[in-house]
Image (cartoon, rainbow, N blue to C red; front, side, top):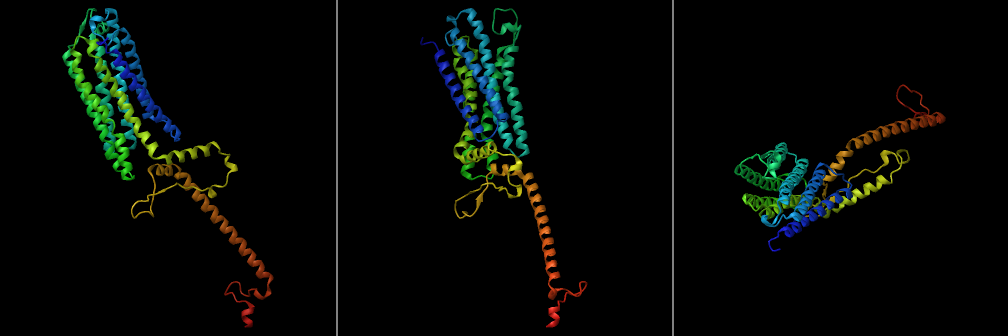
Amino acid sequence: MSDDRGVRLLASCWSLTAASALLLFLRIYCKLWRGRGLWWDDHLLITSWVSLLIAVSINSYIVTLGFGRHIETVDDADLRIINLNTILVATFGILATTISKTSFAITLYRIATNVWMKRFLIFIIVTINVTTNLVWMFGFAKCTPLEKVWDQDVPGTCWEKAPLLKYQLFAAYYSAVLDFVLAFLPWPILMGMSMLRRERLGVAVAMSLGAIAGITAIIKAVLVVNMSSKDITYDRVDLTIWTLTEPAASIMAVCIPVLYVSAYFPFLTKCNQVSNAKQENAVPRAQVQPKELRPRSIAVEPTGAGNHKHYARVRPEQIKALLEIWPELCYDYVHFQMERVSRSSSGLSKQRNKQSSQNAADPEWSYEDRGGEDTPREAERV
């Protein structure tokens, strides 16, 4: 039992899966609670976690067959099944890793304003998906026929192990480098935004936690060397753990920034809750007051810092909300001004008609010359 690593494998993988599931649930809950829908990065993150769950479930199955014990204690029939399923574990683990990194890169792409930054993020998305997914593709394509991949007794040919091992090392280190690059990119993007310094630093640090996934990728790259061992059911346990730790850490790192914003900027949640309540209690358009009488404002928060207490700070989310209702505001303003001019013209016309009627009824103030200078008779008497 002391030589059985299966229990450690299951405990590590399922605890990481549960932790990533909790943070992913909180991320989705916070977004929906704040009145924001799910976008592509959220759907990709959910897909990544599902891939992680499939990989861990397959791990649980092969542990019952002997994965985690020395190869001489495993039956030949079970060994063939273990060989096939370890490739499936690596496949879904790599998919979970690439999809989670793609999700974070898409998140950065949404908030980036620089054209070159957007192009660089597209380059990262393409290269990380190509380089890492080729690992599991080569794992299935390395032997002819396909059955020889998991059953060495089947006659056929396979590629040399040395080139495959070198490429796997390259893909692992490249994945680690991109983790650190993605952890650094939020800093230049957020530093150019109109936020307080402490807010920028807090969000940037939260978005830089992907460096933890980079550390796990480096550890995984070091353990790739153990793939040359013949005791694959025992020596590959640690590699399997770190292969699944990387996507779990990446998912948790991507979820934390959303939780940070929800925790430290609760006014956004309140504003969205009020907005949702108004939408639920909405009445038909004909029953509400005219547009020109509706108050339209965006709340601002006083800075309360230094000698600038008289200034008000508008947050980026409020600017975005203003831009969304800007066309309707312009229409309301023009409509209001037109009605105002119309009412003024109508009132002035009525006032002139009333004045004319009063002048006609008062003989002392009737005008003698309507084409020239107005000269009342009372002035002539004086």
